[in-house]
Image (cartoon, rainbow, N blue to C red):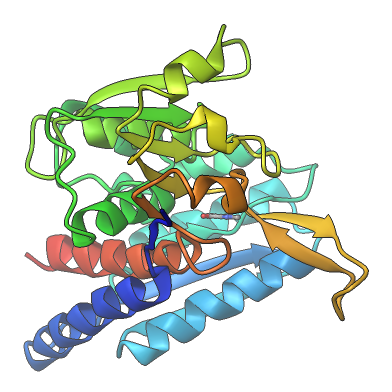
Length: 294
Ligand code: GUN
């Protein structure tokens, strides 16, 4: 039996349509949600992401600004910019695109941001707000997108065993914290696996919901999945493929051809979690604007 595919493009579109209506309503009350994205240097992947973020904000009727700074920008200058953005009332959300050049201490810059504008959800105050269940905090966009995909696919995590593979600060840990909440759309029993986990398969096979963010191509195979599980693949990896025009193709952290025969629902790569990240960044920015204008 083949699993039903969770269409991240369609669900992301749904989320953005709801936001468009909300932004229109805010604009009618004189509030224009504003997102400022800061890019330091010329990392090609970052340039693509930043362009996509700006475009998504524009399409929703938000005010978006992209500040492109040279690669040799000093840490002091970047910190001064963050201070200015923190104080600017037209800026509701700030996103510092990562990675930053090596001579800049990323943690220092991220910590300088006002947690009330931290739409990436990386500031320690945002992390704390998530852990204690304070909904005024911002949740990292990819993990929040994973939750939207699951809920909008008609799956209630309550009481289910949700297994996360990967403990990164950006995906694994926030995914665990989101689904552990005593709140609608959560209340799962959560297990987090990582590189030191003993007998990984024995644990992943217990997952009614399996979220994989291992950061390695196709490492979770069909035999590691509980029959009928919901599988969310957060991985995006380029693997060489000379049969394609670009010489590579994108694969997830899950071996899709095997997993699709075992799971009940599964996200593809690309077209699964990916489109949700930007949708949730927009949602966080609207939340920031709402909270800062209240
Ligand atoms: N670089 C790659 N992904 C992200 C992200 O989600 N946020 C930021 N700030 N930088 C990134």
